[in-house]
Length: 320
Image (cartoon, rainbow, N blue to C red; front, side):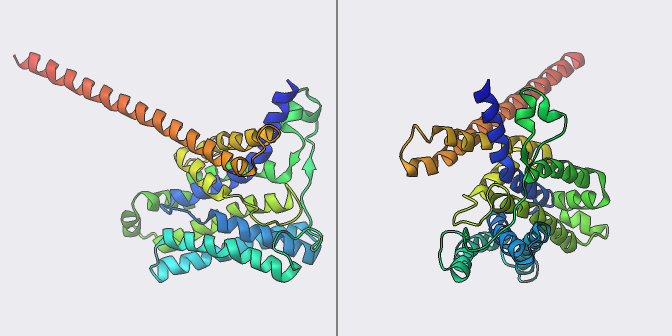
């Protein structure tokens, strides 16, 4: 039982950054935008949060600056996409590649090394929180209580995004544009403005995923910090049908791959295999879920055809 409890606790902790990026991708996907810039959002926010929290000696100002830096990156992408007519997919990938090396260069300029900011920048971080009453409940307390503030906020953010998308006027406009931008524009909705707002809000959410890694999971920025979690989060959102709670569930499913990798470290000694293992597991899970979904869709289609054929036969019998 102790092993199961510890594993679930680790799963929730490891899944936190994936949840943020999955919710971020869900929000932009509802507007009809393929958000491939999750990695760049996480990277720039993770580094900015560390730098500015150390500069201002205030963790909340550091988090605010991390969010703003991610939103600035998205403003650049939006300008290039909506005004310069650059392809969104290519622009997002280019930004990921640019910042993948750019943040390392910045760390080298400031700290004199390309690995991390530890020992050079005194970053602040959010701590873990014990939930009153629940922390004393056997098993449940060990699983739910004691997580980082970023983790609890990720669950809250899922509910907030659902509320915005399905209970507000802005959410209605976002979903309308995602389904048919021409029709939305015909009724007076400023499509470009809503696109930009949706992408900016997605950037603010995705930024928390990066800051969790540099200001929650640890208190410094390091090279390769995100570990391609931005793409894993996008996959979680896609398989979750771009629905907030679907994305949340799939984030935990993909988080199992990372949690299992940690437990297999004493058994598997090859570092390169360990680096690839989460993505191998993620790919397998993705293929299995897609196969199950495709099979279910085929069964539904077959059932519809049988029902239609039965109705045609009954109609012929009536006419005869």
